[in-house]
Image 1 (tube, rainbow, N blue to C red):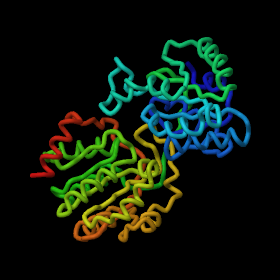
Image 2 (tube, one colour; image 1 turned 180 degrees about the vertical axis):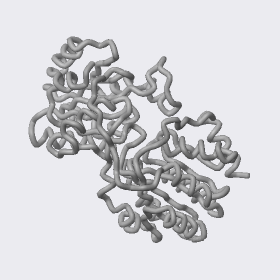
Image 3 (cartoon, rainbow, N blue to C red; image 1 turned 30 degrees about the vertical axis):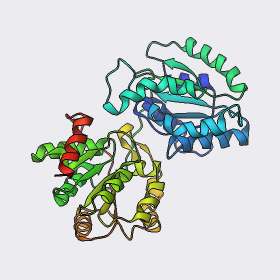
Length: 372
């Protein structure tokens, strides 16, 4: 169905969420209509964050908000849905729009398979009544579902539209750009030229895909790298666990701005532990590029100041390859926790592939290399 028609049927004027490739039509529609407007549309740090924002909107206006997200975010909404929104607590109504990655019978990436299997069950367990929208779902069917949902919402309960692949169409085209000059793949190529045989933990999305292809092009083994194909926001925590367990090994984390924002509290833990062998690199393009390019707030956030406040004694921002190379070499030689923010352009190769090894093979190769 046309995305504009879905928005009309729902009838809300407030949306908040975390971008998803399956919901790219909706995200582009909202960016085209509202941009980032606190009164109508906010992109949140994580799905729990946007659920709480939605709750605040309802408390202030009495109207029903909409939260959009990928189904991987269901884990992040369980706490606020169960302990805040639920009709046994504050009875705050909300419409969730959820992209169904990993739908059973539909080919998808490994990190989405199990999440796809339990998507509807998790909603049921949370007491959220759902309606599935697919490519063949009619406007009348969606209108009928929304009419029923209005009674559910009036009772202080939450509902969800679960969106199958290709279900939403006719989105406006939106160009996402910034003024940074360095490309992410070349940034990662510079990183690998310095890390040598040191282990790298890379964040989910295109960064891990590019790292994999760089190793392929260089004829290097993939055992040096742990590709965090899911678990957005947790790469630096994985790296911390590796670093404290292998104190004699320099450990590198390649992170993204959207991922850092999603679980920024991990930086406080990293800084508190302050492992001398950990280097945390954040490639900041101010965008959720892997799922379409919608903006994050990282372009207006001083990540270096945050890192320093969290306990990263060595924190720098770089915007050129000369400065990047210098910062990488300093971090390599330094026996102290380091943080490097790298300002990055938006964009990737159109022919960028995906890892040809399985997630289990990646884990086994990484553990073998790490313990050799």
